[in-house]
Amino acid sequence: MKKRVVVGMSGGVDSSAAACLLLEQGYDVIGVTMRTWRDETQGDIQARNGCCGLTAVDDARRVADCLGIPYYVLNFKEDFRKYVIDYFVGEYTRGRTPNPCIACNRYVKWESLLFKAKQLGADYIATGHYARVVKYPDTLRLSISRSAAKGKDQTYALYSLTQAQLDSTLLPLGDYRKEDIRRFAAEHNLPVAHKPDSQDICFVPDGDYASFIKEYTETAPPEGDFVDESGRVLGRHKGIARYTIGQRKGLGIAFGRPMYVKSIDAAGNTVTLSEDVSVSEMITSDVNWMALEPFEGERRFNVKIRYGDKAAGCTAYVERAADAIKIRCRFDVPRRAVTPGQAAVFYDGEYVAFGGVID
Image (tube, rainbow, N blue to C red):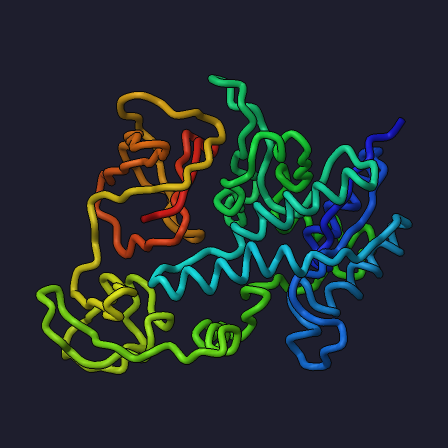
């Protein structure tokens, strides 16, 4: 009997090609689009575009028809609001910079979708991410490893997946480059073969996070003080949700020299500015162990501190306090703009060893 797989279809070329590849490999494929944010009755452009808009549904349905596979639109709006929107807003109001795509992957695209897939009798779920599910040779634990598409590698965004989720996951694009997938889609006459990639956060397509938070909470963030590292007031800011560590543009103040956001104090409603935003170490909490489990002593890794970051060398130590485990990481070379709320993902070669949230 064929193994059944539910493919999360966003209406883009990657997830469409993933469905086609799995069909060619002999799987019983079901296509699913997750409605997460926008209301189908909305008529504005935000309701039409993005990975969960009406255009995505229309395109995914056309691809499913082309492939001759069953296709469903499933409502995950409540889960998305709870695990992604509320988290996103909460982190910004705490003076931190969240990564909503990672939260969406962990709790919606995997946890919620996998639950629905099991109800449909599926053995696996699949997405169009450029990464591989592999066993780490030293521990035989499941891990994510880098894909053939080095410029499109998406392992960073998948660090929070659990062993159980990985065991039920197929990532068919891991051995392909982006140009290979475009060509494959065109050769198979998929109607989205030349569709541009989505770049923005789906629920904030214009990138104006502060306005979104104001509208969502129905509360205007209060203004406060810009201060220097000695606490001297330099000017007024327009609400802490408008700023992130390392930011230089949009401060609204001229200093005659480059000044960057060094830290954000939500309790005091202040934003500290400095000419130097480099640090030599960081603490990472909420650790998800992937290839490795907690270890003793120190170990060498490469670490990425943001999605587009180039992994750099560090030494990591496990710190235990009460019931919590944290990672202290000392960089080989000081890193700029290490941002609380963002993910830190630690690699052993091509494998994701573990990851967590920067404190």
